[in-house]
Length: 189
Image (cartoon, rainbow, N blue to C red):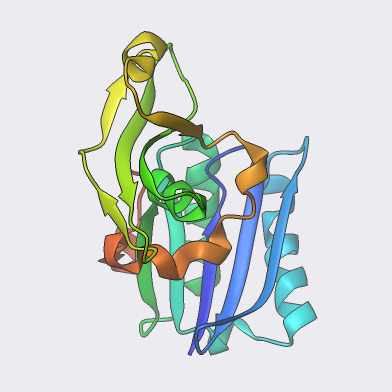
């Protein structure tokens, strides 16, 4: 089983490849270029580096939001172009806040917050148990900085680079991932 995970919801690209549940390679970088200028080359590079072909990938996980809408659309469109002949590929839509929550090492309750756009950001509250299990303790909400910070929970932001790469943590949140048909993969939020 080969799994390909991608997050392009911010000003970065985060890719991971797994074989039978084991991480075999990951890439994370920020660039001044747009995702459309280098995404195909990046996917090609990681596949060549691992000697894996597109046809060998069985499962695809893609962060579909919240985040930079145009960047997410570029990633999704690229994946649809790369895998359009693959009727057998399992495709999953991933929430960027869930992936951030999976990257948090400390136990207890906390809040994950996305980037601000038009003075608002999406956020959700989580609890990480001592056994590592992550639980959503709220629905996703949209609010101003003042509304988001009105909490006694510690806040973690998707823009904090210390939590990257995040795609390596996909197996911690598989229960939150939504299975979709490849051509039904669209941005959320």
